[in-house]
Amino acid sequence: ELFFQVWEFDEILARGTLYPRENRPPAPTDVYVICHTSGTTGRPKGVQTTHQNLLAAVGGLYSQWCCTPNNISFNSAEVYFSFLSLAHIYEHLIQNFICYVGGRVGIYSGDVTRLLPDIQLLRPTVIALVPRLLNKFYESVHARMATQSLLVRMLFGIAKWWKLRMLANGEMRFDTIWDRIVFSKISSMLGGRIRLLTTGGAPVSPEVKNFTRIAYGAPLFEGYGQTECGAAGTLNLPCDTTAGHVGGPAPWAQIKLIDAPELGYYAREDKGEVCFRGAAVMSGYLGDASLTLKTVDAEGWLHTGDIGHWLPNGSLAIIDRKNAFFKLAQGDFVAPELIENVYGQSQLIFIAGRTTRSFLVAVIVVNVAAVKTALSNANEKLHPLLALTECQLLEAKETRDFVLCELNALAKGKGLTPIELARNVHLTTEEFTAEGGFLTSTLKIRRHVLTKHYEEVIDMLYSEVKST
Image 1 (cartoon, rainbow, N blue to C red):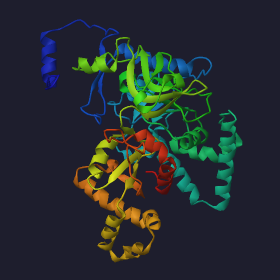
Image 2 (image 1 turned 120 degrees about the vertical axis):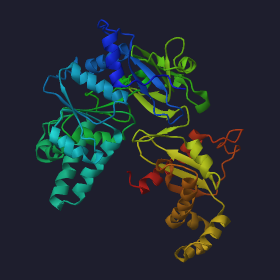
Image 3 (image 1 turned 60 degrees about the vertical axis):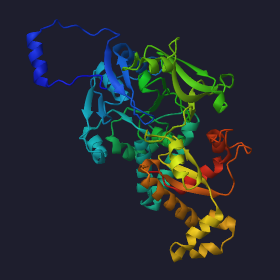
Image 4 (image 1 turned 120 degrees about the horizontal axis):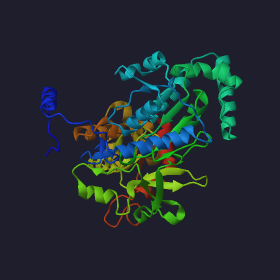
C-alpha cells in the first residue's frame, strides 16, 4: 500500500492555474521533509521531520559553533562541499546551516571516484565526511608516506608525534612549524581552505579522529543522532581534544539513559539505552502511529535502541546496540543473527563487528575431524596441514582461510551480500553452551558475553586484515 499519489508535472501546473491559492508560509509544525530510514532492520520507516524539528537542529549547530566560547565566525565566503544524498537528514541539516549563515553549496560531480579532484577544484571551507572517507584519507596519506624518502618519512613521523603530543595536552593549533612544512601539503588534498570538518553516521576510531584533527588545518566535529531527531543530538566541542566519544548534548536536546537489563546495562552505572527529548524529535512515522508510540513514549522521549555511557567529562560514548544490529564504519547496518543463521547451517558461529571498522570477523566452533576430512579432499598444497597438532592446525592461517572460503561460498549461495561476509575467522573447539554462559536458556547467543570473552581474539582478527 502506497501513502502517496504520483502526479505528472504538467498536471500540477494545470491545477495551479485552475485553483490559485494565496502563498501560505509553513507553520513550525508543518512537515518539512519525509526522510526514510535505511530499512536494514526491516521496512524503511518514513520519518516526518517538521520545520521546527529542522530549525531546532540547525540552531543547535549555530549555538555550539558560533557562540561563546567557540565563536567560529561564518559569512558569505563559506563554501560547503556536498556529496551526501539528501535522503540523509544530516545533509539537510548542514545545507540549511550554510544557507542560514549566508554561505554557498557546491555539489560534487556525481562520480564518487572523483571526490578528491572535485574537492580540490571547489576548495571548500566546510566538509561533512562519513567515517569511511576519513579512514580512506588516513590510509591514503600513510600509504603515500611509505613510498617517500627516509628523510621525508622521518619528518612526517616527528611532526605527527609532536602534534599528537600537543593534542594529548589539550592543545589544538594549526599555526605551528609542523603545519607549515608538513601538514600544509596534506591539507591541500582537501583544497587548502578547510575551516571546519564534521562527521557522523558511525563512530570514528580514536586513531583516525586524532590524526584528522592534526593534519588538515581545521577542527573536526563528531556528532551522534538519528533520522528521528534531526541527526545531531550530540556534538563534541572544538576545545575538546579527547577521543572515544560523540560529545555532549546539543542545545535542543535532553538526554537520559534508561536500564537495559537484558544486556546488563543500568542507568545507575551511567550506562543504558540513549533517549532524546526536545524540539528536534520527529512528529512521527508516516502512516505508522503504533510504531511511533513504541519509539516516542508518552513523555516525549525518543528511544534510540543505542546503548550509551556517560563519561566523567560529561560526554557520551556509544558502546552497544540494544537490538542486535551492527553499524559499520561506512554507516551500513548488518544483522549478525541473520548471518549466523546462514553460516550456522555449516558451523556454530559467532559474528563480531565494530562500528569503527568496515567489515565483520567471526569465531567458529569446528569439528576437527570434519576439518581434516575437508582438507584431505582439497588441493594437495593444503595436505601438509594434516601433519600438524590440533592446536597448530586451528591456528594456521591456511586452515582459517580454507574454512572461511568454504563458509563464504555457502553464504553467497544463500544470498548474503559482500558486506555481510566475514573477512577473517578464529577457529576453536570450545563449545558455546548455556552452562558456560555463552547461550541463553533458549540457546540464543549472549552476544555481549562472547564479545567480552573473545575481545583479544577479535582485536587480533581485525589487526590481520587491512581495513577497506
